[in-house]
Length: 268
Image (cartoon, rainbow, N blue to C red):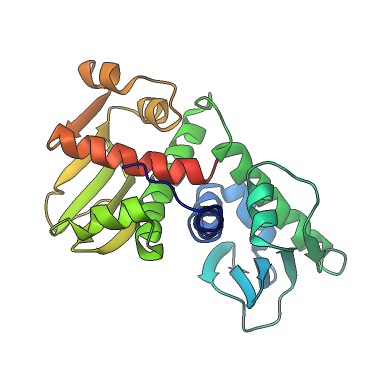
């Protein structure tokens, strides 16, 4: 499924993935961490992450209110309290891939210092989770990371299709109406799905309930899921030992695995 794409297209794919598949995970993290919610109880705050382009600005913004976070695609139409503004898509991608310098413009950091610190804390929690090379020791951290990675993969594959990524779009165009799912046995909250039909895709978190998915990548535990997701476990061995159960044809598991690697390669 590998296919060469230009550097400009690769930057576009990575930028869109970071803004619209990775950054929305702040909502998931805040939902999972009650201790972080208290910082957003008293005042409504609008925060934004953006990058400048030749023809404008690409952004995602968040509404923090009553301890909850609502991510919204695009530039905020209401006044922004705090913003991380990157000078280019390349700058944004480098930052999210771990190259912290040069820093983005930090608008509103002094005027809304407390909110800025809380926002950066959320980003650091997300960075620490997604940047982990091995499974966290605490089971609650394992579950949160699996949840985030399932959401990232399902949303990321769908997003790449809509952007016209050659390999992903070709796969989607050739597919009849099918649902692909990720899940952990006994953990209904740790699931996500992707529906594909003749070039169109739709991704959601949670279990798919309208019918039995066409193919499910099922794991026996959060740690087993992370073994595959973090590439620290061998997929064939995990399958033989039933840490990973592919419900559906193995050839479709191979296709889904290739798509997962495509997303992962663009955000590493």
